[in-house]
Image (cartoon, rainbow, N blue to C red; front, side, top):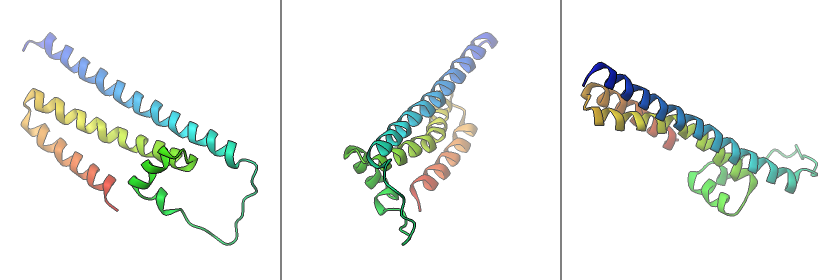
Length: 127
């Protein structure tokens, strides 16, 4: 592979990463905005009750509960799902890097990036 071809491949890779990150941030922002608007339309006129303290509902702490709540159009679940999308965006970036390094057959970077990916996924899915 000549030097100009390598630079084109790097530019293509950088463009893909840039598009992925921009898209992830924009989509998550739209989902949070939809949830915020729905929340204000449904609960905006209610006065907050601070006593007794009630913690976060369990459906907002579980991935399945959040996704289920999105399909029932629960505004808090929409906002929570948007935040999950925002957190998942860098994880998707690392996954894209793994795929790119596999395509380039760069074993060192494949190994290192897979370690980073496993740590991110474990932290994302674990408690």
